Amino acid sequence: MRILHYTLGFPPARSGGLVGYAIDVMNEQINQGNEVYALFPGGLNFINRKMQIKSGSFSNIKTFELINSLPLPIFGGIKTPADFMVPTSKMLFINLLKKIKPDVIHIHTLMGIPKEFFSAAKSEGITIVFTSHDYFGLAPDPSFYYNKKSYDQDNTDAYWCESSKKAYSTKKLRIFQLRCYPLLRKLSKKISSINLKGNSNQIELEKNTEHINTVSEREYGLLRNYYKEIFNLIDKFHFNSTLTKDIYVNNLSILSQKEYQVISITNKDIHIQKEKSLKTKVK
Image (tube, rainbow, N blue to C red):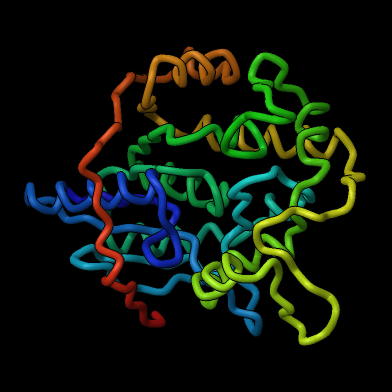
């Protein structure tokens, strides 16, 4: 079987439970004789701003890096909804899918991936499976928490707007996609801020100091519909707990028409070999 995963990335740029779990699953599928590929949101090209794809590898996993992906709101919400709905070429993804011909696509996150990828997969008749590692897409951040409480029972356009008031700007989120970000992240643990421009305009990597959001609730409503349309293009859902399943069911009406199952993804043996680097080449 040919399996294409969409994950957040690979060490050293990305780490955490989602990344570790996805790598473990891919390696096990390879051990079982499957042909496995991974697509992930990667770096930026400041000369050509269009989305592009680079092929490469991580360990024994064949990878495809999505250059100039949509922004990655890893925490703190979304400040400018329009930046997360920028249309791109559907043919970019159709060409990729025709090349590798996956039997199934396994989605581990909605961060960075545009709706055109999902519509391309449906055009090619490929089954899409989604594993819930967090709540991004149901909420503008992965946690569904704001002001120390969950708002999964009050999930409205107004709350998306409210919970994103102090979100990072898109420009600051793009810092997390710079190839030098792993180094900046290490440096940020030693100093409180990094002067990226060589002057007094400092950008703090660990502390959010953005201005209050002034985007309208209507814009967040458009963004919520954007993610609902993506969820509607997914065929099967794997939830990592009964609680997660309940939250998704309560906040996503289309699940009444979908196949879903609760499957624990806890793995105390997850181990990421940090010494291995991601190798890429331009297609």
